[in-house]
Amino acid sequence: MRVMLKSKIHRAYVTDANIDYEGSITIDKRLMQAADIMPYEQVHVLNLHNGERFTTYAIEGGKGEICLNGATARLAVKGDIVIILTYCPVEESQTRNLTPKLVYVNAKNEIVKSKHE
Image (cartoon, rainbow, N blue to C red):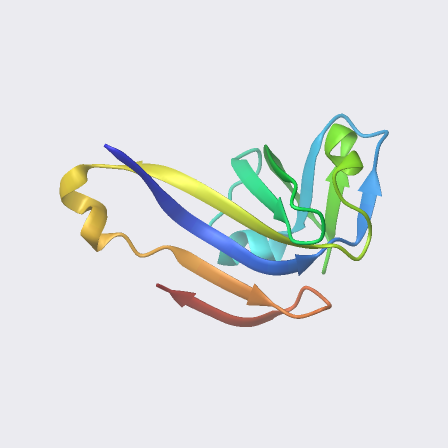
């Protein structure tokens, strides 16, 4: 088994940070669907502004929303650009057939391009 990239939301803009929430990242429901991310699924978040990399879980949000909640709210501020990744275990024989879902967004977190690598 290998752990492979399953999906990516590329260069999403953080719209808020809420320290008083229990924890997680709120992601626009449409972005989650396009990237095949389920509610409560583990995600890895990479902050392009400060180099932080962290793991949390996704919850569905409103149009254009990317909000860091709880402890993760200390790792980014509104306006930071992040990459959101998911991974999955894949049998060695299937690794060449994997096609991750890649979702590219603009400054309003609207999908501008979506593809399978």
